Image 1: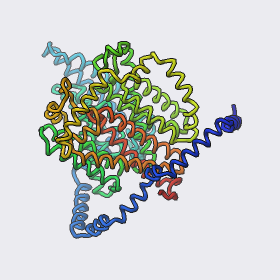
Image 2: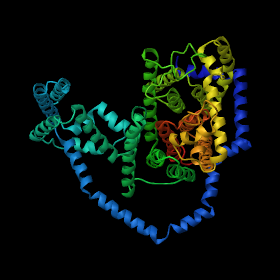
Image 3: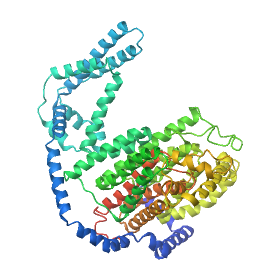
Image 4: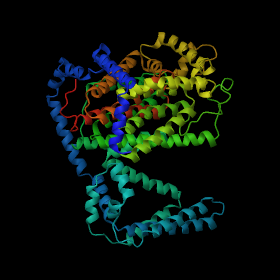
Length: 634
């Protein structure tokens, strides 16, 4: 069917009496809502900012900023920047980078050939000298693999930069995905190839000898870690993309180390004037909440709170880094696609686990749901945590799919959405299901009045499906609220509410150990062993006090205003869809927080602040695009 015929048939469909009436009804509902009190409240962020900017407090701060101490700080910043630019560390990195890029690819092959040869030699010696050593055979296999790999490049006459620049695979990863600068590599690709056989051969021999003390895979890991270190030092933005991609696969300490490196890289570039730091009104509520997190780690009844506080502060710093270094719509999309790709891989593994893995039945009431073989956890330790991860990214996947212009992108996003839905079902997490349904409906309604119309038309079909499938495990799981899991949560909430009467003003300190020391005193009989309150908002109050909860809710409200204000006035449909997709992702986690403490897992805590930071960054850079730059946002 031609494009003109498709448009004609679509126009006839829209002009039908029923569709036309529902579409007009949807438009009237939108206009009524936006013109009403709640619509004004949700879309008045810019007016709030304008009032805040002209307030007495801001004027006083502007006066203070002219004091001599700030001039001294500016001079100190310049001196630190000059020292860093001339530092041995930075010059060493530049020298290594230049030499590697201009080196012949054959030298690269010789290094691996030499490394593999000496690795085999060392392992053979170990085999005869230490017969009980189990490392020898695996080391020989790795050595052979290195030699074969090196042989592939021994006869190439190009340099490494030329190979990277003209490789679709390497170029796609480094330049298209990670967003690294292509100019340096392009310049090095035109330089004369630097010959040299001694250095790569000797380097390979040295690495082979090192294998006496270190596992060969450990040596490879160190090489890859150095490459990762270099990439993040030259581009903290690439570090953010890597964190988005690796979040569900890395441990907490590994993520913390990556974020600390990103923070240091960003701060150094900020000092050198290569990045910017700006605070919006909404950011002050995040800073206030961050201050309560610090107090919750210091003023506590258990020493373990301090270490959890350090992790929380480290992970919250990513919000400020993201909103200040994500400076283009393309970079926002790279981060979002990295999250979606990670979600697709996690979902695929979860579906595989459901059919072929060894599932545990400890996460559900077997007496009520005997037909459920088990609940998947994928790369997480808990099915509810997996559900939290999936519902946070699912609306983002929908937004990218609705705004994608290329067929291959839409296909990838469609497959990712299907995988997420399938895996989400197998988590059997009712809280995640509820959050997903609510936020998906919200996203579809605010995205277009035609989605709203389609939702109304699909309600009878959905009702019929629920009626016909009333005996299925999914429907029974959704409609069953009297099982042991539900009563367990309700009884915990009762105990926590009694607890808040005594400690709700200041809190007891963050962390599960602090909670375990106090909660059993107030717990109902048989529910003394709960690790947390199974509610995000109750847990924030228990740990840090009611004022911490207040500042967090103010932030949530302002982020909602921020998102809806932009969405209401955005000229570009893609910008509006991405804004609402990111907002609905964050909202999904906050909704699930009503039935679970969703920050119990550090990675979900980090993911929340990543997504919120991307939401703020997206709106900021979208306003600077050609379509939005002349638009006045009220």
